[in-house]
Image (cartoon, rainbow, N blue to C red):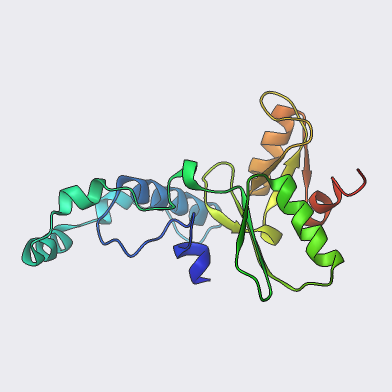
Length: 182
């Protein structure tokens, strides 16, 4: 679980500064929790108070403003991979496309390798997801190549994307089968 959030491409870090991107992610998370009926509306920015963190930085002789502007390695969307596979006994491997990740998953399963986890990134938010919990949209037009796959955390977002782009919504098992027949 720690890798999911703190690893390459995760949205959490041990950096104590409050970054604008983190606030945006918290706002998104709040809307997710609202959709699920877990919380009512919340003013995310209203509950953020970095006075104590700034005071700690001053006491340590560190420049809070400078560190707040610094980009945390591996968290920029341009630094992220499309998917990752963690097979038992192997390091986590990054893939540049969901199609290549699906090929690697099929190969691992075909070779009888245990898969600890596979990760993908939600198209709408960039949040890292367990691949088996995501939904995939295959095909379509308007910037989505016919053989491409796009991952989503939420069914309604996947369905909307598929409708708007002429694609179809798939489970992980269906997405893994896409390139297998070629």
